Image (cartoon, rainbow, N blue to C red; front, side, top):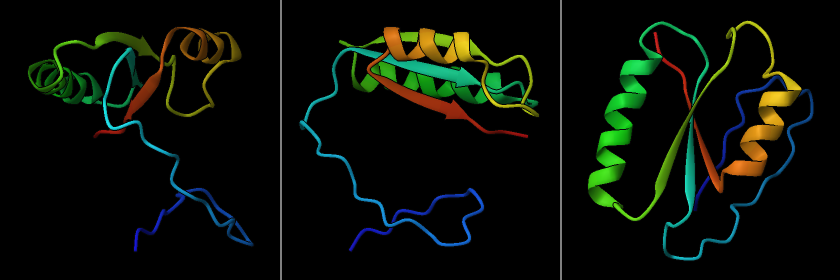
Length: 92
């Protein structure tokens, strides 16, 4: 059984289901650096690994202005309009 954990504070946790998977990775993967130290190093390595394993996907990099605040709406829209997937880097 797969358990999905949500790191946000929830007084009454919401039950979540895993989204259906197509079995293949294609399209555009966004990599979001949230401006924490060494997040860019993590994303550089991750991008290299993904490119080796799944060479037919395109990668786009994004940078949040600060990790202390939510992602600005214009950046969220840009990511949503241009990416099929998003990986967010949390590093220190």
